[in-house]
Length: 300
Image (cartoon, rainbow, N blue to C red; front, side):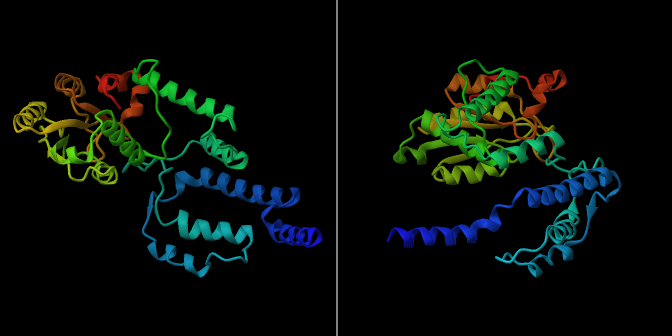
């Protein structure tokens, strides 16, 4: 029985070997990818910011996912023609249209090392260094925002999951029971990112009352109407519990009046979440901090 099992293991080892290239194969792969990356960076200034080449992307199915691989050179050509060329190029200096920007070269190398070493930072015992690195990053972010030492958080994949995490945190902070959800109230605006509506649904709060507060002439939440709406909802026996403000809306870059909103949240006992996915990082510089007063007063 043991010999049969060992024979099977050896057989499986041979089958899996193509997934583990030797030193020479790794060198060839790395050199090809590095050469492509270098060429892309060197030529990005001369490439069109936008290429209306949707037809090129439709050619991807001609090279379907299969157990029979294509060579690295063919793969890179396919990648360049069908993935990189069509659409916008966020790394271009002429690209000013939307949130995603060109990545930093050092960050790309960091992603490469993270993928190669593949440390799992979710449990301290198995990767104490990686876990500490994550906590250091969170502490640094909390510091430049102005949060106290007691602040905690997590690194999410992006703004949508951050929004979901914040809404769930607010729900749990108020210990909302299922029977209370139809009486709960959330305040936001038409400029609030659509991830908020999706997060409310995923968090099981779709039966909440949603109040869309009107905007001023700079597309910011009108605090007078916010306060009046909260008072009216309380008068009707409802339970206001969450305000979703924005530090840099995706459409206009507008920053809601956070100090006034924070005052209202504190006065009436609401959780204040500010979506800073677009503008929050500007708190890194003095000019940005001046444009984001009150950011440190948000609960999340």
